[in-house]
Image (cartoon, rainbow, N blue to C red; front, top):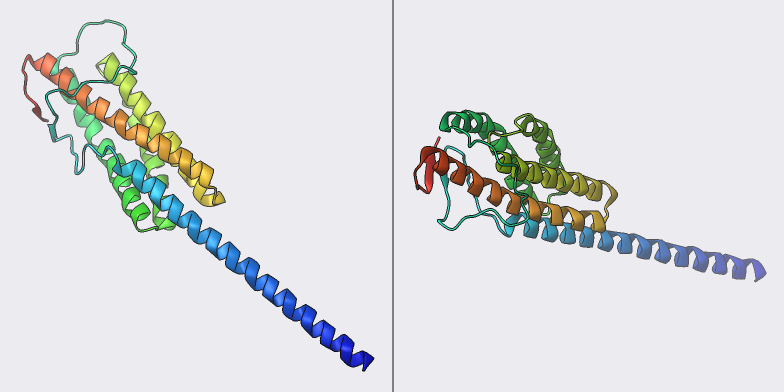
Length: 213
């Protein structure tokens, strides 16, 4: 009887341990699903809100008449305005790497909307790889444009880095910080586009909203 009681107690202990193990596993699974959902929601919001240039290409740039650079862009030291030739030559070099960056931004938005963590990681890594190419094009012919583009690249860089850290560590705080930087990067990009249009209009002494490069 004693042996039987001990065996019965052991069985109960093992069963209880199995239930506890299963409960912990289920809890981890729920936490993992919650992290995936929150990650997708934050990144999707960051890359969707303020999306000003869907399908953007430097070949054809359309801006509203009232597009202006926000006040937070520092006023650059006064210097002679760039010539149209300088601006067009610089923009021709900028087009390919900037379009590549925006492609990865769009890939990241799609992956986030689908809760595809691997796709988000690939897009962040590819976006990071493009940034050095854009940095080599600084300074631009226009100092204010240089400052705005530098800010844009910095915010995209911080956003990609925080996103990768958050994905690898499953850290929602890092993901949230990434969403902040990516939201700022998109606003920065709007500033860059407005400054490009303004610089070209000034250089060409025109007042067109459509710039053909």
